[in-house]
Amino acid sequence: MYYSINKDLGIYMNISSHISDILEDNQIDALTFIGDCASRLNIKAFLIGGSVRDLMLGSELKDIDISIESHVQTFIDSIPTQNVEVLSISKFETAKIKIFDQIIDLAMTRSEFYYEPASLPEVTFSDIHEDIYRRDFTINTLAVHINPERWGDILDICNGLDDIKSRRIKILYPTSFLDDPTRVFRAFRYAGRLDFEIDETTRDSIPLDMMKKLSGVRIHNELKHIFSENNFVEILKELENFGVFESIYDNLYLSEHFFKVMLDNRKIISSCSDYGILAIAFGILSNENRIDFSKRLDLSNNLLKSIRDIKHLEQLPFEKCSELYYSLMPLSDLTLAVAKLFKPKEITSQIDIFLDQLKHIKLKISGEDLLERGISGPDIGNILGKIQTLLLDGEIGDNKSDQILVLDKLIIENNKN
Image (tube, rainbow, N blue to C red; front, side, top):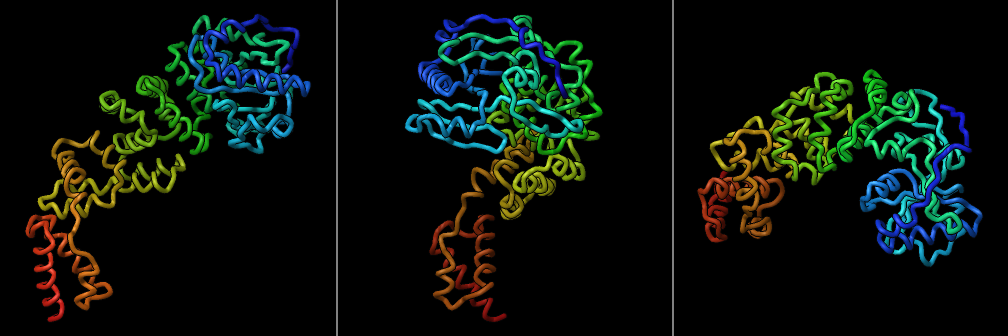
């Protein structure tokens, strides 16, 4: 996507006093340091994007994003190293650095070109104006100079200030969602987080048919961001009502029961994004669709295992504690925690028994006791397994002497065979 840019346009105002009121001292020190370094190198540096949006909303800054009109590695190599810790740097001209105990996301000002819809863009070095025009929504296009000679001057060339004031989510150009359909997720996420409305023209331009072109990794990443939001349930509802979930995976409809479970367990779900992904798989999809959904999102092996393990829960309830133990022992705590959200009380009670009691039952004897009695190889595991079963079912005492008596009896029987 190419743009015709009039660099004479833009609203300029100074917000240095606002910066002093909102930012913490170490944040101001970090911005000042980078701005001073940039000026010495004759480079322009800007606080940019969501950082400025939150600043203008009077919110504390959790993330500090800075764009520089320079290649990142060149800039880092040219600044005093005693005050800077480079945490990471990528080939895409971005870096994460630590200055005055403040984490900074540093990026080269750049333009982006999408050769195909939903593809990753080709990135090239550019100036701040091109960098602004590549962004997702007008509220994220504000830039603030942090060079000392222009400290606090705000650059608004896309009416971002007006849209923040109007509490409006608005794309920059008509094909924005075609270029990057993940912006659909972000539009609803920002609207939910900030209590903004999505502009009608922006909403009308959402191409649901393009959502299927998104890779599973990118969808998974956006869902993780959503589940980390405090009001993720409301965001999910808006996405569901708009038809986004059905567009990324057939037969994926988030039900009212699902939303009720999410609301009742909002805190535990938001504590770990994987809870949310598992909740969708467990609470919405059939066994067959769960695996297919996992592949669609290209989930990690650990998360895929958790989803595969859900089928073990269909065997519950059990009469014997040993059966319950051996059925649930292979399952992760994450799988069991999510299962408790959706299963009836009869099942959740058994899960609680496993988690609170059975999981912690350990034999007082070990393989060494068997080796001392001349038992070796697979027989060790077989005999210990039998004793473990008796212990779980309460047929022997939880003390070493009782377990030794049973051990000696089993050894005699084993030798007879």
